[in-house]
Image 1 (cartoon, helix red, strand yellow):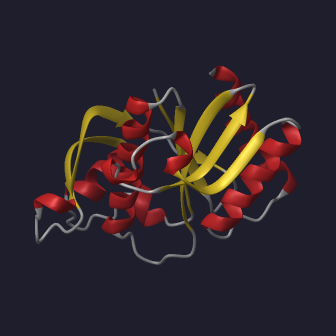
Image 2 (image 1 turned 45 degrees about the horizontal axis):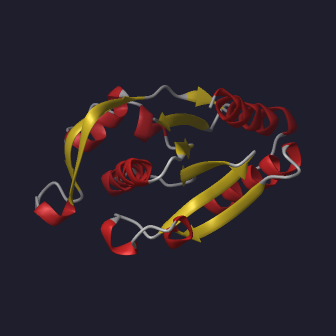
Amino acid sequence: MKMFDNLLEKFFNYVRETNVEIYNEFSLQFELAFFIKKLYKNSKVELERNINILNVSNNKFLKKEMDILATIHNKKFLIELKCIIDQKNARPVTVYDWIKDIKFIKEIKKEKNIIGYSIFVTNNKNLYTDTGRKTGKLLKDFRKREIVGKYYKNQSNKNAKDCIKINEKIIFNWKKINTEIKYFIVKIE
């Protein structure tokens, strides 16, 4: 739904123009939920909502809770967030958790008619800039802004239960909030 794509970009324009401070994932979650409620008075915005509200079985999904579940004009939108602020190192596990969010949204979409989004916000340049250091597939692909294939939580111990496979290519582009913080939005259709 194009309207929601525009809403998310409007939110980041609002953050830019009014200097809203995003300092961790909860602040991002709160500010976005507040923005949606302000724009759509009759909307329902739920934070950290258990997936059983969607009448699905908890035990068949990677995660049990959704960061944001918004209902606008009887249409549901699922938003998963990653906000990495003031983290000195580019941690592959952070990227793995983001890929897990993507897979989770895809799982929910398979069961329910929900539009899904993943938002990633960071001020860590090491996540989006090639540092020249040798890295595993996870960080290398993330820095190339292109995710597809198998990803392991721990590169040195490739345990099958800690593997997530993304079949369709996920491509994203970084945008600036300010001189320090960047973000991207991935729509899962």
